[in-house]
Length: 261
Image (cartoon, rainbow, N blue to C red; front, side, top):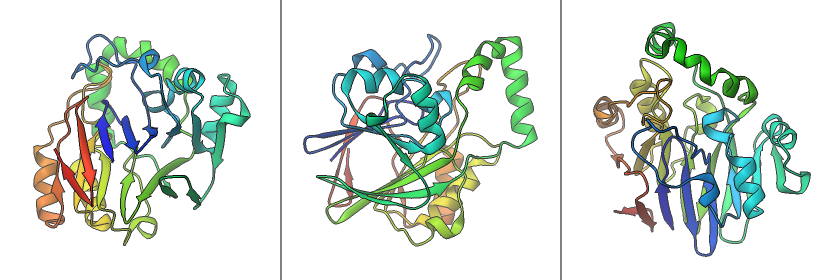
């Protein structure tokens, strides 16, 4: 299996001849860093798109990608409603609710009810100060892309598994003991995000973790997140887990439960 981080919470997963996208937001503005040359219109093949939630930096490119490729989109019912309004037909949408286990040719997926991280006031005020009046440009994007219900996913490929979270809200009962080989976790949305996500990693107990959503994906709304505190927190709270910091656009192999970089 091949895994490529595409910035923000977006990943491309290739399992044999099946192409999967997770939260494929690629419409970064000209100031975004790192530069990800792939654009939504460049995606020529996709079999499935899994969405964690409906915010613009996760879902706004999905109608174009799905229309071009014919990919089936799996998301919570409320997110599917938004995508239907954007023009995607019912036959391409698979609404999800609660805990489900779905079987596909080369993999299985278990849905995990999750939640969006709740920003604390210091985080909000810092963001408002950083954005200033320029942040108003993104207000229509926010309003037209409500989060809806949030989903996380546990993918099983053969004897191994990986979990994907698009936001860092969770219920302990839904994730404790999952023990995936790999976890893809976001590191944005709260001033204490590193501790919050490291505690999530400790509950999941994966062999490997890849942090995402730490990039400056839409200045001035966003900023680059320093991952050093996250690495330190994982070492303290989940010493059994190895951290792999991804490079945007560079594929890594995930074979027999091990990352090959």
